[in-house]
Length: 312
Image (cartoon, rainbow, N blue to C red; front, top):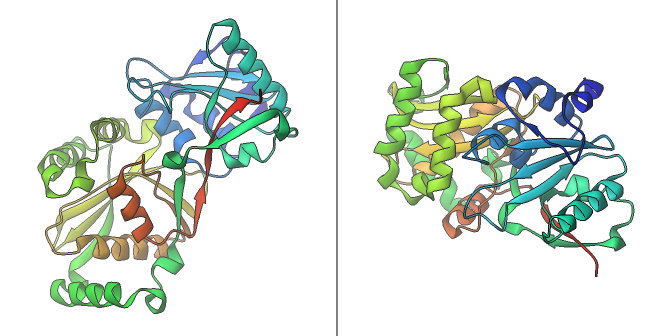
């Protein structure tokens, strides 16, 4: 499948427009790398290029991806993923950009790519902290003995007040028109319940696209039900690993005080029971509330992202 992926897309500097029909081929290539939210098929199809499809090209067995969104100049541009002669591929991109009168630069380059560059002294690596992806260890997040006392007390009160038998986490069928419409309705209904439910317009647009695209873009969903009423949901992207999930979007009703504690517990318990060890909860996009929420979950690690430029 790797050879199939490399022959499927055009050779740089020509680009192929990525479509839903390319999902299997693109993910076959991506499967050789650690899960990465920003480069998942779903993210490319819903987050970037609102006026058209994202573009992909092959160079020396590496994939070059064009990321663009109006107003996100710092995050827009070319990125690369691969492990074969990366230095040569990066230099080829820089030469291409110079010929077009553009500043040579790569954006959103994952650390597992940066670590395979043979001659790092040729480049400058600037951390894109707002794009770093937060990774949570499910077992640690659910370990009561390691929870701060105030979190432990709040969660016990919530579970006692609601009744743990009343809480269910169930898959939501995104192929169902009824279920999709219900989630889209709740995005509107819950927007004002918390700043976390509508942190910024771009994320909401991507969430709507992800729900509408469903499995076509590699998305699936989980719902948090209390007495059979939906009080929260996660939209997840295919991670291509059984013990790893990627949370692309989330919404909660906040019908109860400190509801996020209950959501972390309930979803985490479902993940644990279904063999999931790691959860990627995406980046904070330099939004203080998102950053504090991700830190509140107690991340065990981060997938670092970098801007790469040539050394003068």
